[in-house]
Amino acid sequence: MPYRSSSKCAIGFALLLVAFALAMGCAPKRVSDIGVADVLASPYLPYGVLGPDAVHPAAGSRGLYPASVPHDRMCCWTSTVAHVVARKLQAARTAYVTLYLPDFPFFGDGRERVTVAFDGMPAVAQCCLTIGVHRLRFPLSRALAPRVGDVHLTVTASRPFVPKHEGVNADERALGVVLARVDFMP
Image (tube, rainbow, N blue to C red; front, side):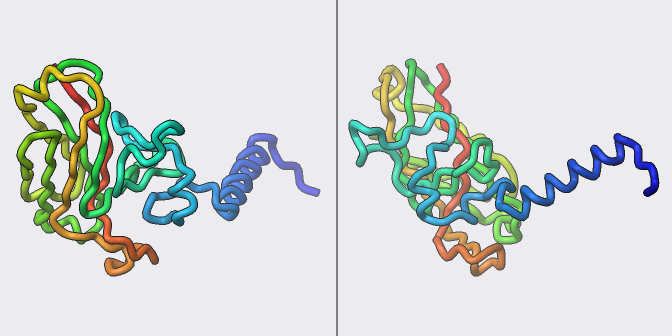
């Protein structure tokens, strides 16, 4: 039997473990790749966004598809209209909503328009978004700026992204955009 160095054996073993993990489904998943059962049991939401809790199971965000794994770059898809609850911990004059449009041809034409409406404020549209990360800035109203607590937002995408129609996967849901985080700044 030929002699093999321990470093070659270690590399070979590591590659075997990676191949095994991928074959067993341990590879990172995208939200659009997972089933409804995974979504319902998932605790991973965008930064600053609240989900339902044991006391108020019907409260929280609707039209938002949580991730089933932490640090999912595709967390979290919205439907074309998502009602999101964000936690505002201090008085703030500005809200930042960070969105991600994945590198799919559908988003490459720069036609995506996203509208965001905050509690008691008129909706504000951001036009002509394309592939990439977008940190959208929204000045808050005089009534909302000093308030602390839950803030309701509605995020509306101008057109539905259906992964199956775009040849991405078998997901037939009408998705909007990927909501990455909601921040409030003084």
